[in-house]
Length: 229
Image 1 (cartoon, rainbow, N blue to C red):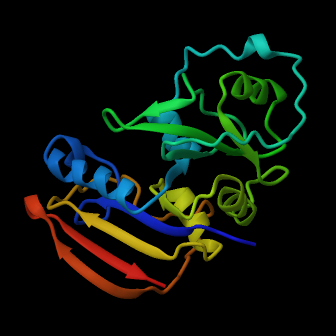
Image 2 (cartoon, rainbow, N blue to C red):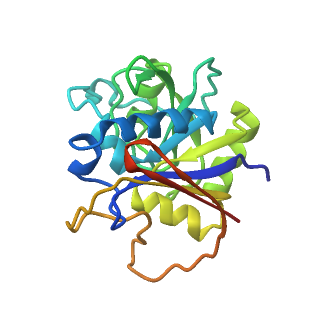
């Protein structure tokens, strides 16, 4: 099997939290640099469905009109001149308003859904009508090895930036699919019970060793730590 070079890229507080007011309310400049770096190190970036549902799902989209649709469960390959925004969505949670996601401001991304054959046929019919690319990678649970192989072969994605959340990050670590870790640290303590970089579903420990590569001092008192396999 083939796979893109996978870089985990996360913006955290000093105490390791991946979400909180420290990102937008106190250091927007560092957040902007994070978005620039994401596009610089990758051909595509992606998240788990929980993250995309929070930030990008349009709950006004009505999928009921696709009821009784039949799915052929064939990959819908759409090549794009834009970076791919990849959504790992095994059951069709995220409702995309369009096939292009404009994020961050003025940056167009082609939406690409990685799903399973467990997904409802009406969701597939909706994606197809919207001209949203999708691939199947597993029966009920996403097989990340199959997914990355297809992303590499079918979409020519050679560099992929994994940008959270904590659960999908842990799944990539579990399968030994992360080649590089980029942790951008904002100069704030969060103190909340928000999630950290990697958290397993069952709460069991997941120990993986990486080698230190370099550290960079950023503007606005940020730090970028880079570790590699």
